[in-house]
Amino acid sequence: MNKAFVCILIGAALWGTIGFFVKNLYGFNFTPMEVVTLRVWSSAMILVLYLLLTAPKQLALHKLIDIKYFVGTGIFSIIFFNYCLFTAIEISSIPVATALLYTGPMFVTIFSFFLFKESLTRVKILSLFITLFGTSLVVGLIPFDKNAFKVGAIIFGIGSGIGYALYSIFSKYALVKYSSLSITTFTFLTAAIALIPFFPYREKAGLLMDPMVLMYAFGLGLLPTAVAYIVYTYGLNQTEASKAAILTTIEPVVATLIGITIFTEPFSIFQMIGMLCIIGAVIIVQLYSKKELTMIDKAG
Image (cartoon, rainbow, N blue to C red; front, side, top):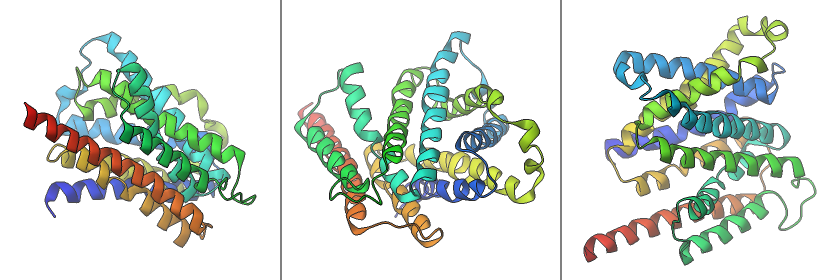
């Protein structure tokens, strides 16, 4: 396995550890929005420092009006998707929340059809149905499981998928002017500023002095965010996007293992099949996209 593949796998595996840090911060009575704030703040500081040391020119905005891109990626995507994901983890479990997050590619397909006029092929439609079926299994709708079926978890889980998808949509506009690393840094910086009013400084200031809280908060911003993105981006620059997308499906696998082994969260065989369906749908679309591009290149 080459170095690029290893970097992508490491990045995706680190993304899968998000639930570990979130669950532990919940143990200190932080709310989902407060955990979002801790993640965004720590990530923004680390990413800005990284760019200052490696590529300071990438911290310059081309035009002030370009902030609109990062309002989209930072507020409408990162804040919204993290809040929904962390709330879904609180209501249900890490495996269920992560599986629902992976409905994101389905929403990217739908949004791209309406916004960028991308074709909705039979394979994409098939993957949408597979994702829908897999989601129904994960949330306990098929077969109906009253213990697993939680309306709040479904709403916030699907919301995280939509927010996750919006990052790809807004980024597509920003990529015309900025590198992917610059976009991520400006995204977290914008989100950090927007979240300043939402953290109860007086009530929780004492907790921020707790070494364990600092460790989990810094770890959340460092490992599944800054480091994960940096190594993933390095790997992505050395390989095909379709292959990278397939390799990232290790994320829900890692998240599920953490939820089941560390936090002993329940995850039935039907939910496992549902997760595999969702992951399978992502892989099918990526494999088909690669095949389609190969055919176009040959025809040209």
